[in-house]
Length: 477
Image (tube, rainbow, N blue to C red; front, side, top):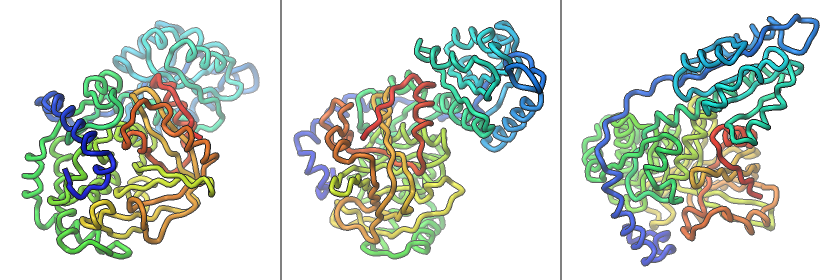
């Protein structure tokens, strides 16, 4: 434990000690030997065109030209996304649907596209009976079957509806559907203890609910990787961070060197273990070896979610969104200013590329960690003013907390709180503050505080994903 850590002081010695003792009872379970994951394969999605094309000038349904346009857009999306494989076919009856599902493989998610009035209702039974998550894409005037998607969902089926003339919605459907098989191929590394809601702390429940494997890593093993980090790679990491920084304020050369060495070691760890996610439960005590905040930023920018303080809820949230929108998240603490109808989010680690791996890096300063006397080296990232954001977190493996806002202030140099900060205008700050984390039954400060912020308004996606994964949505504020 870091003796300078004010967050630990805030939680109280008794509570912190209880967490450590509780963690010791399950650490061995997490640390059980598990073979390295194989390189992740493409996720299969079954695309079912239902019925027979109708003439262009009459009847309810899709014509041949519309079907070809949809197939072309699907091929474009398959190539763009790169990690999906589409099994495409036409079905006029339940037997043909069953044959397509068998070809796609057990549990394959389904994109159903109605071609003829009431065609889907005649062929959908194997999809529903097999509990396949299904997005139903319905062009205007392509039939009346769209009415049944909400009814199927209300009966417990994992179904959501995209009713639109916009063929780009087909890519959105594939992004949503790929989340489920990608989670089943996910390998998460944890430096215990895990934190967050009890279901998220349980490797067995994570595996059962989402399909992801969670494997513990011993700090001693990682310490050896830090020592083994190649000097040339460390120098390159130092140069990259220092060259692009607007200003270096508190950190000295040794602070930066330590943080860069840890960053390189974390990248090597994820490559060696072929892992897709990371949670570090002991990061507040890492000052002597070098804080992981630069490494977390680098991993997130490269599409590998990394969570501070062992927060498994935040990590799983970042994974879901990474697979859905290909963007990293900013995990942080919340604090309110009701006089401005504003909510702050602040933390000492954050991604530079909130627009995704091909986006531009945000400007940043190099700072000392705000809670350990200005020591260490962390990024203070200055995010984009005016940007609409979605603030969210998956809790208890079955509920998504979500809200939207707009960034109205980013400090030139942060003072109070963690280093990276955004101030966002929200719909009703007083109401949000009064009901904050009311869906959570815990007194753990970190679990109550943390949310993950993403650029863009993703509320529709949140509701679609929740229907496909049998989750609830609680809109905050």
